[in-house]
Length: 243
Image (cartoon, rainbow, N blue to C red):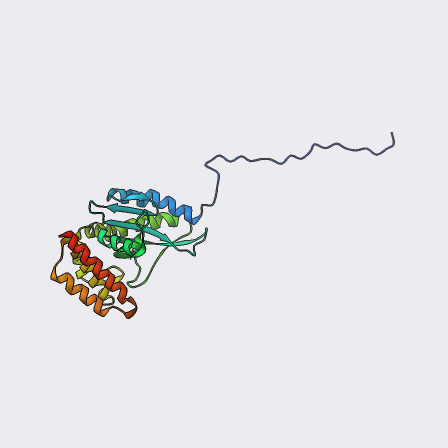
């Protein structure tokens, strides 16, 4: 036949490559990398020192109802590719929590580090004094290195300090030394007078409590005077009940 001839060709079928699980590659977010590192590195150290919880927060309490909290805070400006984080520490004795509840009306079910009387922040190794350094994480390697450094900082400045301040006498000494982490007596004398009075009230009334409350009430800012009066009366009532 003189018509056109057509050649039939086999269709081209693209080859499919199947990767085994070990060959698959995916990108872990910075948040997922941090969570994994905290779970694998920091959590065992927390448990070894008696703290309970899961990343990013661990707590310990005692028979008196005092709490210590460790919280790894991530920056609100973090992205899935990069995040910054820092460790916040807190000690919240039961008398302080009772006053917080009186002031706020209620407390969260889980005590947060923001409720602490003593509050401090731990930074990466090598952060200059006075600088607010944060760990920076963009992947698994960064997260693992950061978690290892966090564990080191907690072993030196974290777990021992928190457990020491869970002792009421040690906390009272800390208050009298003028150092409650962020808060220093030289900058916040009224706060420290109130804190000492509050802790002393657990053992009943005494002249030192009255001296501290009078000093705090006399030197408070005018806008805070009414609150200072309420605090003083509340502490006096608590001291009377403790006798």
